[in-house]
Amino acid sequence: MTATMVDLIRTAYGVDAQNVIGGPNWLEFDRFDVIAKAPAAASPETLKLMLQALLADRFGLTTHPDNQPLPGFVLTLGKRKLQLKDLRRPRRKWLPFPTDPSSAWRHRWTSRGDLS
Image (tube, rainbow, N blue to C red; front, top):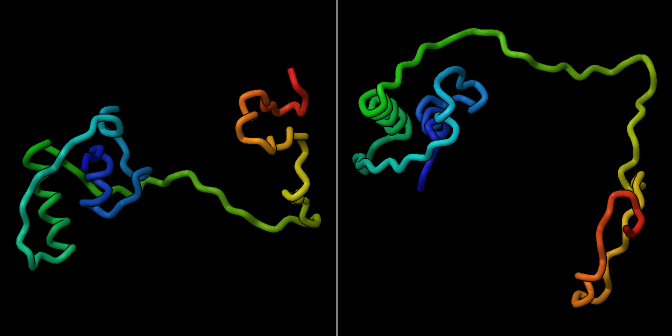
């Protein structure tokens, strides 16, 4: 099983991937195979510490805790009544599914609701 460096950091430190800030762009794209042995009786917390040590030793990873404010959203109820749209009534007209699967290649799907 391969994992990105962000996946490994997330597992080792128990943080969300979006909270891993900084570092080169390969952290999210390059994949690595981690092959290691651990004692059978090792607890999950011990395994995390071992993975942290592996990342520091093999990749030179250094970390520091940070209380940097991150953007967020608050959903509050306004003064007007809710104006949610019913999803059971789609706005766009879609072509119906073909009844004969062998004729599916003859149908072109479009978001405008018409054939081109």
